Amino acid sequence: MSSGDTDVTTVRLEQSRLDVSAPVTFCGTYRHHIDEKGRVAIPAQLRRFLPEGSVVAPGPESRLMIWPPDQWAVQKELFRRTAETPAQERRFMRWLTGNSSLLEIDTQGRLLLSAPQRAFAQIVDQVVFVGLDTGVEVVADSLWQSEQAELSPAEFTQVWDLVHQRGTSASPSPA
Image (cartoon, rainbow, N blue to C red; front, side, top):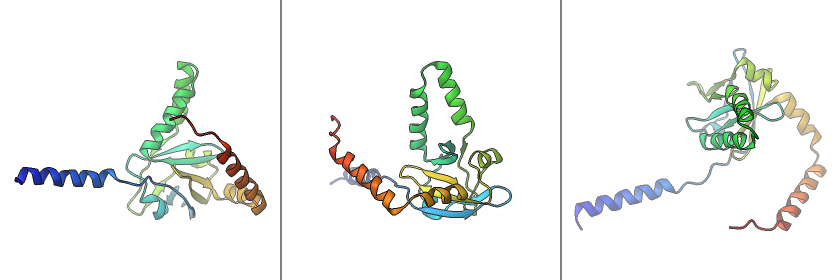
C-alpha cells in the first residue's frame, strides 16, 4: 500500500466521523435573573449547542426565540413563502429580521437583550429559557409561571392522549 492510499483512507475516516452527528434537541427549563443592563446568563446546557451564527428573534406569544443558523434559515423561508405578494414579503421580512439580532455571548456566558427585545417579551427581572427541540424560547418568568399554573396533570394527560391518538391514526406521508 502506498502512502497516498493511506492518506486517502485517513481522510475518508475523518470525514465519516464528521458526517455522523446526532441532531441537537433543545430541552429543559432554566430560570435566570437579568441584570439592569439587560444581560442574562444562557444556561450552559443550552449554550453549548448554540453555534456561531445563531439569532435572537421575536417569537409568538410575547416570546423571543434563539434559532441556530439552520433553523433561522427555515424560519425566514416560512415567512417568505407565507407572503402572498412581494410587498407583503418585504413587510414580513422587515418585521422578522429587523427585530432580530445575532446571538452574541460575552466571556461570562451572558446574552445582552436589547430594551426593545425585553419590552416585546415583557421581560423585567427574571427570564426562563425553554428548550423547544429545534430552538430555545426566552420568556418572562411571570408569563411562564402563569401558563404553568394552568397546566394540570389531567389536562396534560388529555393532550397526551389526543397527540397519540392522532399521531397513530394519521396516514404516513408519501415518500
